[in-house]
Amino acid sequence: MDIRQINDEYSVTGQITVEELDQVKAMGFKSVVCHRPDDEEPGQPHFAQIEARAKELGLDIRHIPVGRMGVDEQGVKAMVDALDEFPRPMLGFCRSGARSTAIYEKSQHLRG
Picture (cartoon, rainbow, N blue to C red):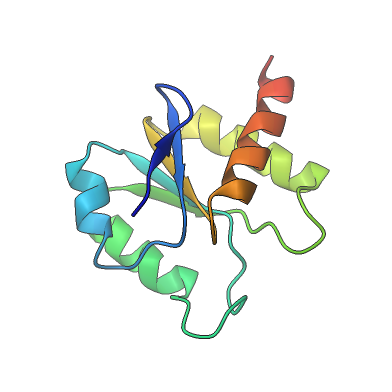
């Protein structure tokens, strides 16, 4: 995992595995948001698999997929809701971390 800290409340990384969630928890993250649609790439873990392990570990988790069309208004609103509802620090992930960064930055304009 290549975790990049955006600020004290939010960091991003590329695709994580079910097994890496233990490390995510040990690093002090309290919530996780997946911005990657299922079946985007062969062999990618499905959100349900990651969600099940995250819940076992006591992590809050939400799926806010950002597809090829990029970040849309509905996604940004869902991200604002996640930031308002979930404890932090939060880890966002997608294939590379770019979409997780973009949706967070756009959510900050609505959170004001």
